[in-house]
Length: 264
Image 1 (cartoon, one colour):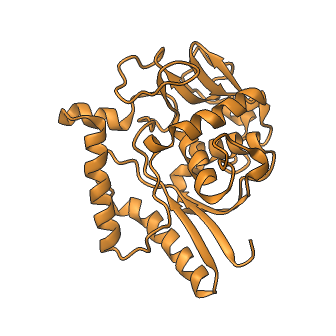
Image 2 (cartoon, helix red, strand yellow):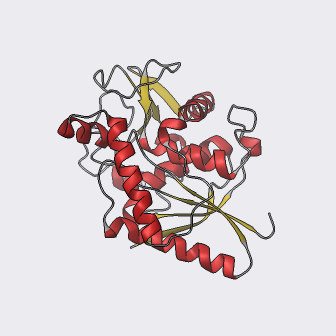
């Protein structure tokens, strides 16, 4: 839309205090917003809160970061999330960063994640195996275009293989109870009780709050509008942003984001 800029910024995983390196990427996004507003543009900004699904290796292995912190502190994962979300917002205010229009949480976006997963299954970009839902990266030829990690190079790397995957670099859209039976945060889904993969939340929250894709409750690819700017730390580029691109563009058959910007 003329005069309007949509911007999505990858927010914190609230399992500990955000450090100055984390806030560097938020200051970076804030400077972009302030400049665009100085030029007379109306910026609609989303900064998410990750409170489930981010595993310790940034991929599909390891344990959920919130669960690890909760066990260490002998608290419920949502208590951990609430504590560090409050601290994050205090630090945000101390740094005098502009308040975004939306601060959605991953745990509040489960229905949207399920709807997008359904669509990816219908379109042949995803498959169910042993109760989990995986994105088939062989169905998306542009995988790796943002980061340079093309499939032919990835296949040469030594990555622990999940026997449930068709390709060792496929990534999880939904973990069912079949993989993590003791995970505390779980929701009902068509594929069993479980929780989402980390990458799914950002695709869904950006689509929900910056486009009309979820206007009728389900995910409507025809109502998705390409997002203008997406930012994050350089470490988000792969695999997180690469997976966001694959699953979103696989669903909508149009560009997900016009401009990617990463703080180094």
